[in-house]
Length: 49
Image 1 (cartoon, rainbow, N blue to C red):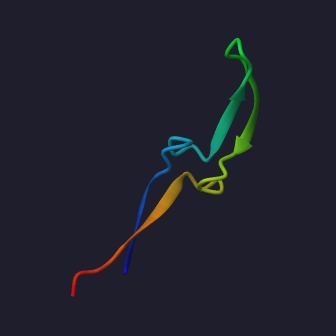
Image 2: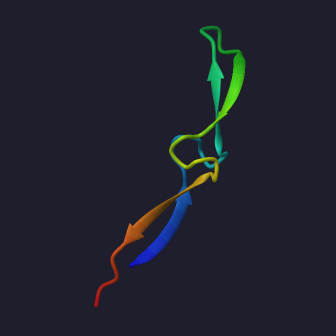
């Protein structure tokens, strides 16, 4: 198996997400739970033998 890194689609590779209120103002920043703050997700790909 090969592991391939690609930018996290949820945080756009930043490693954090911005929590905004209804007017669009940033209230706080939180670590992205999908990539655990790395900014990348690892996609596993099977090697063709």
